[in-house]
Image (tube, rainbow, N blue to C red):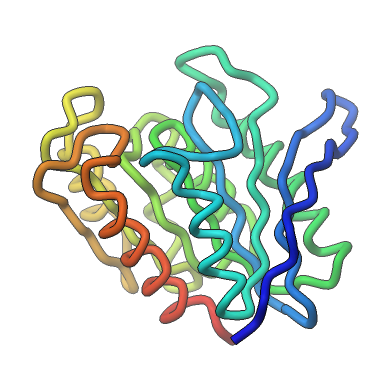
Length: 208
């Protein structure tokens, strides 16, 4: 088991403004997970700040993590601008020696990670949490290079679970759909189940 280092908060300068991140490096890691939230941005993610907890979980399994805050926080959000932020984060990870990546995105961020994965050869797995469908059409071209897990709460009244059902139907194998009883849009009602599902998915699909 690897003991993860404390997160390093940084701002990556770009020609479109700084991208704020929290980096959880792991010595000798070759794989990393990048996580983004919804249109309201932030580094902590949904489900009562599940992203720092997941970063610790990944670190214990030898996987580095980067939490990325979107520069723009105006609904409904620009998927291309979000993809730019994700690509900025991936470039940072590559510069630190990481070679193989997974992405996690919540709500608007779900569409962003789908679009980013479709355009990035070294992204091999994604998880979406209560994802929107707008901007997520590239889900149809992820397979077979990139595996996809779709998680959605059955009690989500902001974005219907039908959104993840549709994305799952459009995606190719390998793919998985998890619809969680009692889960609303934030997924805080099933936080530990989400945490376990995400970790298990990346343990299965991220290693070389």
